[in-house]
Length: 164
Image (cartoon, rainbow, N blue to C red):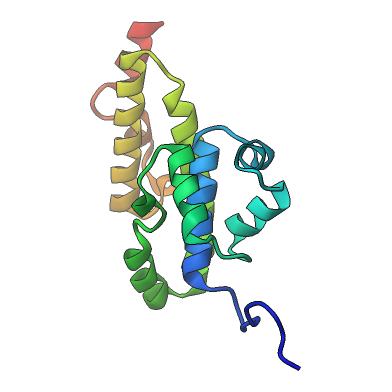
């Protein structure tokens, strides 16, 4: 007897998972719960959860509705897919799970950053992030940085003291 629906494969489709992750990112950046988005679109939160995890495919019409809801172009759901495919093939599954953790942290930071209204504070945070990233790239890990680098060579402490 022929089964209805799509057949279960050995794993989830990587495109469905990617689109689901983008959906989750958009939802989290907007500060909305799964229930909020689901009810606005006439879905159950379980259905939205399945979309976000890649268990269910998002149809073209639903993708269009989601893009309209979040006020983004449909292409946003696919941006970075090619780079991720080549990166995943080269680095393997370990890098993928590490990327998910980094993605979650990045989303949280972006959400907090959006709520900061003072342009000087925003600029200071951007500068701090840039310095940390540069130091991390140069030294391998931020924990391995010398104490002088952690304190800031360009007088970061002066900026902080000047604000107090």
